[in-house]
Image 1 (cartoon, rainbow, N blue to C red):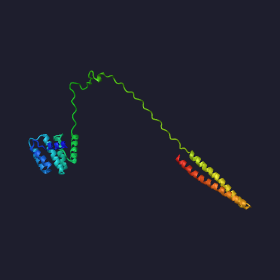
Image 2: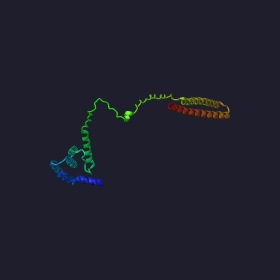
Image 3: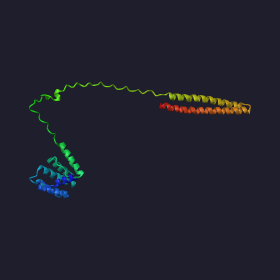
Image 4: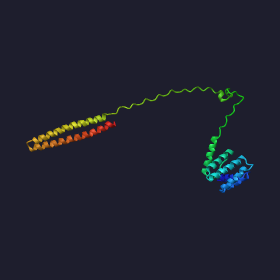
Length: 241
């Protein structure tokens, strides 16, 4: 907090240009039009140096941006940076204005031409190789042997995907067929027992054969149901494995 207050005091302190100090006070009082009028007089003062000229343009940019004149504010910031590349905004400046100033500074830095290369030494011919200094590590070090490059490792062979395993499906379907065959045998026996019951002479024989036919029919129906279940399970095994 102390450093911010000190920066504010230094920024508001009047310099040799008599109009610049008064313009700063008017800006702090939010009198932007009056500040711009004073800055015109400050620019025409004969004793203005580059640092003061940069501050004048900086104040012009601040006033224009505060009044919504973005194009004039950007141009003033650029003129301030051209006069003094180290010019800084006053403390407590809004982040929006700081962003505009930063963009102008970066744009101006990109527009400046690169520094020219250093001039060659006239005492040494252009094609003369640089000789190492006696006693330096470059002059006394042994030549470094070339590194041996290991041969490339061949890639591992790809694993072939085997054929799908079908034996669970075939075994289940075979059991289903077997159950159908046995069920058919019990069904035929049930029919035969029913025919014998119909032709029996005595009631006791008819009752016994009739019950035998029912039991055989139940076994046949159970085998048919088991065969159907095994067939469905075999189909599932066929598509899963």
